[in-house]
Picture 1 (tube, rainbow, N blue to C red):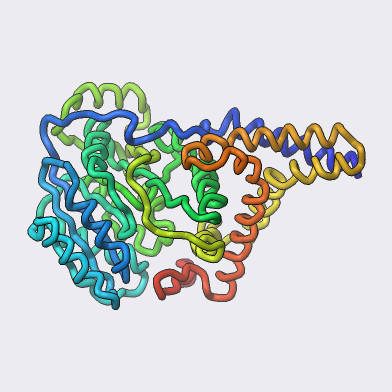
Picture 2 (cartoon, helix red, strand yellow):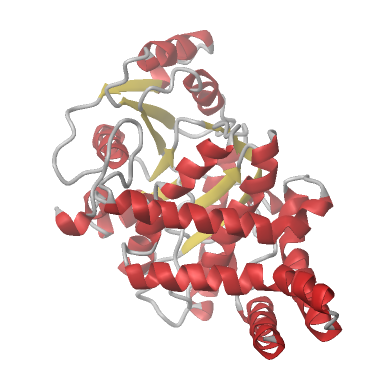
Length: 417
């Protein structure tokens, strides 16, 4: 038994060494939108599209933050009221008048959901269609629960223009106030970065693609190049599906505005020997934040279980591999410490402690980013166990026909449509 446990612990330790050395430095939090900023000499036209379904509690704050952006260029907001029953549109209209910008807000009454579309993407499609009348250079796709820092749009546009990017997105700062949020939300970001290392996403030579749906700036020509939102109309993880489509779709176009254009293009060609790759960027934001509360374990559980099995492509084999992998990577180390101490086998205990320390050190930058207690870094094994159970529950919900439930709708496996 000692030999088996020691072998598993060495395997777990080897995996962690591999992750830390060869997984795109995923644990770092240095990919941030607010790190640098470029002043633009000319300003693209931007239209924001906000799908909203029963968001009366949050829409006032969200729209106020959008309408008060300090972006000096042409900017309009298109709110798509997705058949809300709580007066979302009325609250939105009231905010626009309160801040003195009713002409900047366009409220669209959502049409019936057609077969083969997710509710959110159908709303986004309608918003883009209406916004296209303004011939925007960029669309800002954002959720109805995001409070934008006044400089967010200006920073997004500056990033896109300076580096000639097809798409820029930021994982906004998630709410981290309640006990369960402090325990589980930083880990959600950590696991996402491990799955999609931001440095890999931002490298045009790497096929890894991802985005964070709360705040996405996408060039109109890039959206047209991939065939529009309809190409991902069934995607439940729509942000990453959009990023993958853009990155696979081809190189940047010939946008002519902004400073540093020629230098950016020369750098782009020097860096990227694969001209058929679209250029995207994903990072963190310290200023723009999500308003969505997750005050209970049940709320976070439902949020994760909604799409976890979708992320695994509804594959039982991938599910089994994920469950085994999570146990091996996160659970084996603390269990080895306990068993090694109980058995008096200090080789097992020390090896387990070393693995536990490595994962805690990897997790610490995320804990620090969210200003949580440093001691929470050592709780990652327990957190990972909870996320493992959420993933298993996600599969069970799918098999029971309850997968993908959100906002009163249940979305089936696209393969069965």
